[in-house]
Amino acid sequence: MSSVSLNRRTFVATAAAGLTLVGARAANPPRRVALIGSGWYGKNDLFRLVQVEDVEIVALCDPDSNSLAADVVTAAGRHRSSKAPRAYVDYREMLRQEQPDIVEVATPDHWHCLPAIAAMKAGADVYVQKPISVDVVEGQAMVAAARKYGRVCQVGTQRRSAPHLIEARDRIQSGMLGKISHAEVCCYIYRSPRGNPPDTDPPPHLDYEMWTGPAPMRPFCQWTHPRRWRYFMEYGNGVIGDMCIHMLDLVRWTLNLGWPSVIHSTGGIFVDKDSKANTPDTQTATFSFPDLNVVWTHRNWGSPVYPGYPWAYFIYGEKGLFKGSTTKWEFIPVDKNSKAIRREAFTEMDRYEIDQVDAVESRLGPHEFPVLRAHMRDFLSAIDHRRNPVADIEQGHISTACCILANVSMELGRSLRWDEETGTVSHDPDAAAKLARPYRSPWVHPSPLTV
Image (cartoon, rainbow, N blue to C red; front, side):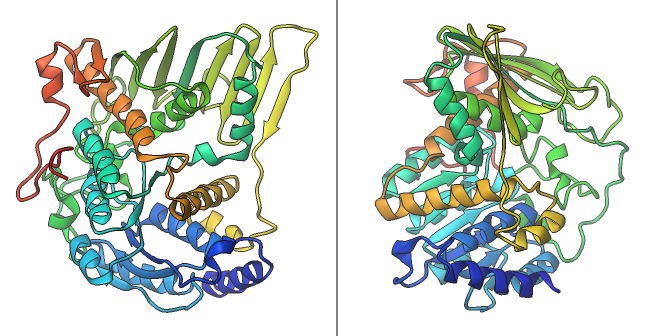
């Protein structure tokens, strides 16, 4: 049975049973939704939204005409009307023509900022993937746009909506760990790319000029598109920008932390020096908060420090150790007479039959689908009540900017002191100059004053 027919049957059945739809919307015209960046994760976001509300998918936008054509067909089978969404290469034309209520931005990182701001300016509420930006000023401009235009902007740091991690947060805030003085975040699941593929012409179905957009123009190679663009700093922020943001954001959310005052990072390409990739394969960063350091470590080689927790966060308290990940968490008490606690993330594979298909096609774990659905429900509720969502753009900006500042610290070889009031690095003109990287013409870098 095809994934399209399976999903339509499953969607209709679950909707009729009242299991997924947000009740207040059932009697209203469907919200018009557009997706910018229809790659594998963009579709994951979009299809989870469709599962929790009867939205109308009106448009998809992507510079890859081959994948876009296939995605239009897939999307048509994923919403109730079965209408094929219109296809666009340029998000600006899409916004003018379609005037969507909701825009999801799931492009490569270097394309998050401009489409999100344009969508908010056009009156849409936005769901934007993390990291929200490739430099700090982009993030500041996105926060300013959301506030100026009164738009809800949810960031794809969906672990804030994971039931098992919400329980962990509540227990920690209720004193499970006692006084907390240290936290660690890590990722050891990346593996450095091997080889040095030759530069080639972009494929004819890819508008490489549009794909590159405001980023520096690199020669195309087989790693550039699709998906492996993360090997290049021109398009993202390395492993720390891709993976640390999730775990650092969880620590900040769990412990109610704002901005760090000092950021220090070291690292580089220590192992795969011959690779075409230019992202660090080894990096450590320390984020200093009042009475607490959060230390990030990633290695694209070797084994994790704690078996079973290759991508995780650890919080150390006087009463014990907390170990958390996307799939589980544990509390290991200091007192031998106290009981350890363990919780597993739950799945809904029996309730949402289409997840079985998507788990194969998208390569997401079964535990990911319920979390994305919960995050979409929170997003829709925030829109209905005109409130900040659980992963509001400002929180996404802080977590993103911390990772970007760590890269700046690593590049300059010194600690950075962050001034929250002025939104800049104190007494360091070289570092401050790196808070907004140059844009390629004709694209213009936004600022909080120009959105």
